[in-house]
Amino acid sequence: MDLTKRLFINIIPGTTFLDKLTGKTKIRLFFLLVLILIATWDMRILAPVCLIGIIGLISIRPNPKTVMGLTVFIVLVNLFNLFLIWVVTPDYGASIVGGSTLLLRLTDRYIITAETLWYFLTRFTKFMATFFVSLTFIQCITPSEMAAGLYANGISYKISTIVSIAFRYIPEIARDFSDIKISMQARGMELDSRKTSLWTRLKQNVMILAPLIIVSFDRVGNIADAMDLRGFGRGKKRTYYAEHEDTKGDKIVAVINVLLILAFVAILIGRIFFPGTYQVWAPWINA
Image 1: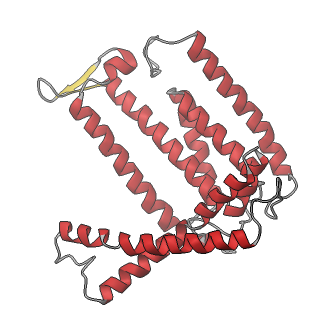
Image 2 (image 1 turned 90 degrees about the vertical axis):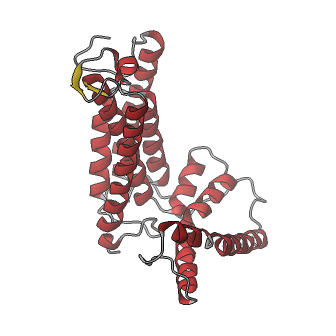
């Protein structure tokens, strides 16, 4: 398998360190990292997790065009979100970080403070860390490994299989959307032409949803019939061919998972028994 041409969602496992881990190990590592990201606003934790996500993503050698395009889009959306927060509440950091150190005054209302910038940086890092960790997880796990991993972690095999099928057919839906779009363009509908107004293009692209939904429901019916014919759901247990014995890498990650659990517990204890005055830690403020 040419990893430089890795699809956004992979059907065939890759050959990198993360690819070779079992599904249950990947899922445990992913959920523990996400839990830690949810539990804290401390840059001392967010920055290392974000770095881990970036390193993990680079290590599996994804398709550069796909990753770069998606990353630029997420960054722009995140920055726009922060800009809207600043427009509504210019001194937002005062209530979240504590203090209001003025750096620049644009008008009587719109000011830039060190605390607001620090909060925006913390929020941006948290958002991007979640994005990189999630993208790495999606890129290194196959639908079959996801089903096997969920089942190994105590989720019902019925739910695990349903999640796996939904995950597997995301590329199929994208392919159907592209096919329908090409078919409509062949019939003379302008969907990408610069001569057509943006609003018109948006309305015409929405028209693709109707046939796409019909095709998707037809596929769902076929899958459901095939699963019924094979007796899916009659047994209490099942096995997955994608799950294999733990490798050396799984044992290493198992130790890391234990450390992550301890870190998560420590964060919870700190927030419950030693709550700070403000939500976001700042290096120059003793909260």
